[in-house]
Amino acid sequence: MELSSILEPSAVKVVSNVTSKKRLFQDLGDLAMDCYGINGGDAFAALQHRETLGPTGVGRGVALPHARLHGLDKVVGCFLRVETPFDFNAVDKQPVDLVFALFAPEDSGVSHLKALALVSRTMRDTAICAKLRANTDTTTLHALLTDSLSNKAA
Image (cartoon, rainbow, N blue to C red; front, side):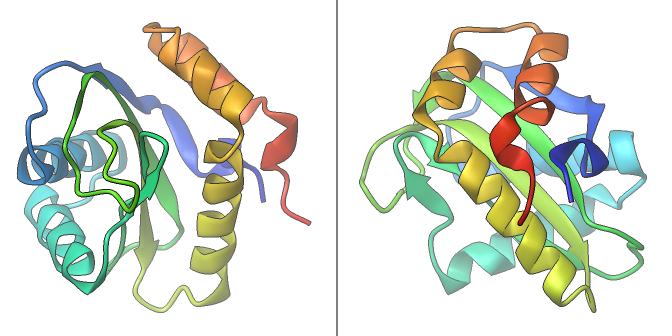
């Protein structure tokens, strides 16, 4: 599995006005609807529900919200680079500015876990995160994410 099979170029966006998780999840729902035809309200609700189970802010300015949705046939992703980091209640209490969300079919099982591991491994790479933070062009951001040597699953 590679990130290029999960993340469409149109699902990468730079945003400036995110001030809360709720606003972020609304933006992600809208992006998922625009790029993948996912019901934005369902995506929002699923992300909100998942967040009640435990924080998806994994530290060092990175959040990996994810949810399972009815009607999907494969795992898909959305990436947001937030220009002004905001409080996400991350595990390290640091503000978040890099967000990679995953949406998976309800019965995806191991494919969801593999995708989450792949995204997590990629977003743990400090060099990739530094390059993501240094760029605002969505084409460049997509290339940085999908061309990474670290994004191939074992």
